[in-house]
Image (cartoon, rainbow, N blue to C red; front, side, top):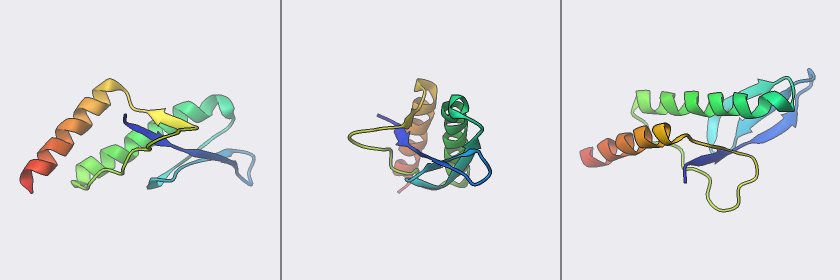
Length: 91
């Protein structure tokens, strides 16, 4: 399963700060709980695009019990699996 857990904490300006423990570069904010899931999904997809563009290994997805997490869509999983296959065949 390709999913990345995230945390949500109140920021000092009244917004909610969204962070991904396994992706240190991935942070975003939301104005309210209604925006959290959408912003978190956009954030993780953008971060993974950056990893692939740079040819870096992808962060390990969350394993086991998942609280709040972004489950990647099937088309993104297919692209990631192709990327990982190409990276592994080089080395």
